[in-house]
Image (cartoon, rainbow, N blue to C red; front, side, top):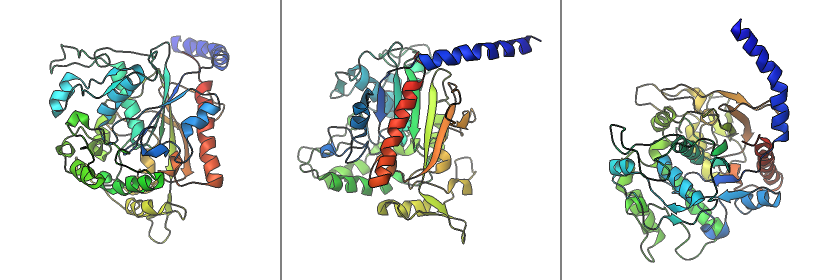
Length: 408
């Protein structure tokens, strides 16, 4: 009887809540977070991670949206990257936390990582929309976790971290999280880091950059810096041989099948945040073999990766293995991994396709796609004409959706 009456009250209140949502639009800033091997606005000679030869941030700003692009460690762990986002927005010296720094032997407060703040007023009264491409989608989920929870500096959970970010629990700082081609459940592209180096080299060529200061692996916390006038090839080789790769505080672990499942065990959706995910696919099933093969317009450098992932079986730490549902991919990330987190000790987050006009619920993922583009086309690389217009419209339409969400 009580449950029935409660449900009826919900139906009576729904029109009022819906009207309030329609009237109370927001103008919260949109924060763009790059993925693995990404770069910031001051790198790559003006060739943008978000947009390539066209700047998605600029396109959105021209349409009246407030947008900021952050630049975080391109191969760092999601924890380190999330901490860097916080200080780039709020301002101050990066502090990775005492316990985390001790556990992995990194510098807790790198002396060069001090920021004036892109959006220093950021708080519960001035929240943001976070949009992450590829690994950036994991990173923004990590940031939400670090904001919402008190992090302790001791193993007995008695002493809180003293950093501005980690020592406090904050709610309401994030209005929405959007992932674009994100490996929420990891990627079966084994040795993904080594296989993605050719793309960095290619983008350097496209950007037409000269000199030596066009790209930074940003690993100061690992006491790793590029030498003055050091050759690019030597810089890359030293980075690939660094001891960081032997730890779990690095990108290669976080985007692996087991690493992503570990993250999913505690990066659960928040009941106060709207979630969206964009799914991209660059393969189709070969009727002769049943495997997935790349579409005709897939970028040359990505074709071999798409083919490899289209038939690959990967074993998890517990002895289980992936199956054919993992074969469809965008050349870097498996399609089945993009919808939202479904692995991990807490089970899957709620996930459903987005339907225009339907009321949106916080704490639930709304999916778009699959959209027929590869991993890099999804942020505007190597596309022209109709495809270029399509991707520009995608981001403009999504910005409109984000601004239509109710103000907190």
